[in-house]
Length: 241
Image (cartoon, rainbow, N blue to C red; front, side):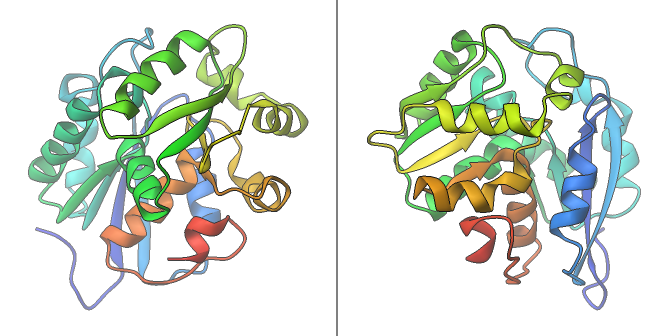
């Protein structure tokens, strides 16, 4: 059973235990949106980036978030963008059924919805890790008719704490480094990458929409909760809400 239609919509987030960006960023984005309230619980990520996230990984966090009777459930992770977008969509459907929410999404599903909303069919991917993961992302996006025409990566995959420790200047360098020729948008994959506060300024510099996965998830839960509130300061996606 979801929350009362007369009160704020309840958003339940499932957040990796090592993620320190998800909750503060979501709170900042939705600070002036009174029609929603956000609650979070945590789970432990598997050690391998190649591990698919499923109910076994999420464990008790699904039952715990279900106890607040959420209207929308959001899995704050992007692993589905390289381990399988179909499997990720099935996870979202499973989360809705398990919690009784009217809808559920993931960071990967939010990015896909954002790309569709912006009519972006070619992207330059920013990823705080290796080209091997971006190769897998390109395959998965290709199944949705989206081409990866450029990329900006690091020499090796970082852990979640290492991603969170990247400086603002280093993140900005990473976002500006990719080849954007032919791209309709820049896609930042990784909800612990603190790129969200840079999106507005970078869009003006690049002349392209910048879709940050954590910002996209905040945008998507607003849409799924039925909110039409535009939120300035976080890029074109939320301004067009």
